[in-house]
Image: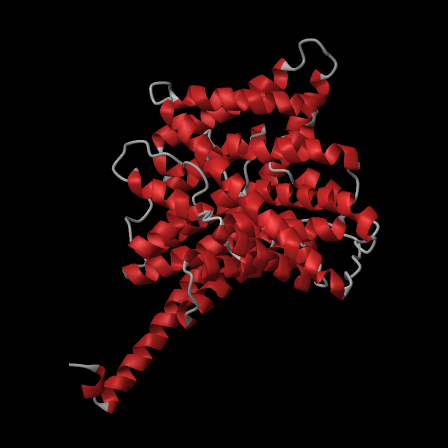
Length: 446
């Protein structure tokens, strides 16, 4: 019987059933939001403590200038190796996890096992906390999806509702990672599901709101980056931001190829234990950590200093080159950890560098690099992930800055255009394709 053949009573029953179903899934989203808010908030808090402990260890090692470099090298190598061993036990814990959430939405793959949650939590702490240049958002996105899936199965929701919850709570995990509830929601609509539906929208907004509210009780209610008031650039500079976006789009294509290329290089050493490969990568990162703590880790401290104008122009090129390479290198280790946070740092440094080059010529870019660094973060995100609205909303929330919306939008659209013109695939599309190819493998690549 088709919908047109239904009687008014049957249609009324369908509407009532739909309302009950929506209320039920929304209540589950709120409950799961409490859980990912608590887990994600604790994850952030422990990472903050790990950053402090790592910095203290390196500072103490400076007292032995000849052999002190061994401390950070061993520290990061050990953390990376143990984190990679956890991936051996739970293969789905490798890498970001965003591509797995997207694959679950598109292909309706098997639901994740609950063991993925502790594996992602502990593995992420070890990998990121020891110093690998990885982001906290990948693990929290994946943990949010796991909590949603387990909750949906326990409450006997159907597979469609489980998929919806996984996408929504994955976005809640992103919101918790960056204290950005709207950024998490837009991530679901633009990147994971690539659609706006009433049901998905309601569930996502509820999950993100509850999760971020809970996490703020743990890590505090303040933007991720403290930024002084930024002057609105004059309107005629819109052309400059468009050109900046085109250049950043090309840079994003190169970055994506480095990420995939790094994974491909590690794949060639299939006979070498993956923990050994991770340890070697960790040792390289540890050596960079010895020379400058800002070169390793998720990069929040470096981004904050760039946004505050605290990095000398002469140092920006070095930071850009090293952070541009060390992010893909760290991801190639195959440990739990995301891509977002490291690429935001690259965008900030890139924007500040461009400001230092062109401000003496143009003169209207402002006295400090903050504005262009903020635009650079959103634009590089758009170039790599190819989700411009998510990038704009995310960076606006993270910096509590609203008067740069027009420059960010223009620059992000230009970056999207250039990346498309260069035939550069969005990073998570490529990673998802790798995931599909390795679906039958015992230890799939990240």
